[in-house]
Length: 274
Image (cartoon, rainbow, N blue to C red; front, side, top):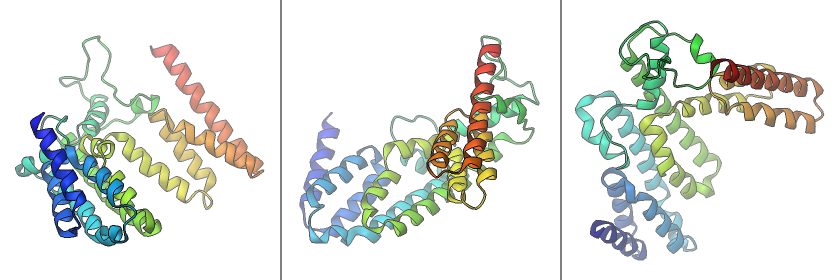
């Protein structure tokens, strides 16, 4: 409790000062040593200084901070000798030095389709299937779980960095909000455990960005994603509504059909296998 009050006082003190060098040092310090308090620093900085002329003076340093933070996660994710850096740049609620544990569990579920190792059968006698969709039962993997986890995790972090650079260039005036979102607790959760939802999000975004060029192919890819995880199904609904609004009958029918198939598959699987 005393530490919390002390850090809040420090945040208020720094944001009240008209010293950009001290602010940037504090942002770096909190990002790499006290990341649990970083959202408070962003909040107080925004409330205190958003209307001041020098608010944008910290734009480039904050961008460097964000890219440096993700590069440190990328490097620490590859080498076990950097356990301290790995755990220090994750929120205190996360325990353990395992890399990308959510992603590893999904890969482990695929590994169990080809193997019968420890943990492949749960206490209730059911197979270990973490994905939640029917497609996970038909994606076997027989290689090195930890190696593939690190490869996919590292690739995801590179995509996060690329997405950040793209967004701050496209929405330059919103750099502070974008930077906060990329260093926020929910994003920290995604990159620490590497929830497979993040990978699905990148694939879905790629489909949406190129949708006008390849609408049917993009819808089909999103359909496949919905068979692995349920929530991409909402994208099919959104695309169907958009096509209806644009009076594109063909694309409306394609997305509606894929949506019906996806939902029916999920419902039947739920009724039969539960």
